[in-house]
Length: 106
Image (cartoon, rainbow, N blue to C red; front, side, top):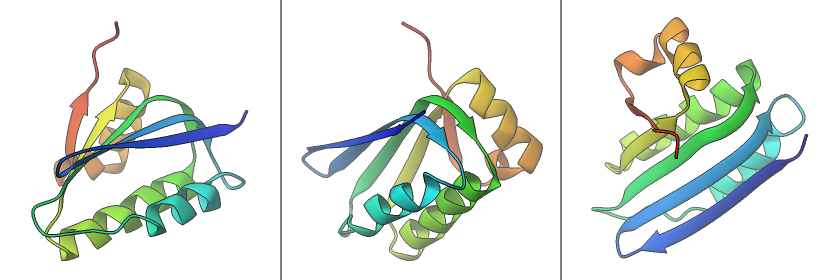
C-alpha cells in the first residue's frame, strides 16, 4: 500500500492528512515531508493519522523525532488517531506525553 501525505495551511494551523502504511519503506518519505515544514513561533500542527492502516517501529520513530523537533521549536502538535493507532500509542507509552485525540468516524 502507498503512503498519501497532504498538508493544508489555515493561518497559523498546519493540518497534515496521512493515509496508508508507514513502515520501513514509506517512513523515509514521511520524514522527508516533515523536514520540509518550516516551523514558526505560535504555529500549531495537527496530524490526522486516522486513515493510517499500519505503522511499524520505523513509523513511530519518525513521529517521535518530529514531535521532539516541534517541541524544541515551541510549536504545538496534536495527533488525531483511529482506535487501532491509539492502541499502538498507548502500548508504547507515547500517549503519556503527546497530545493525542481519537478521531471520530464519520
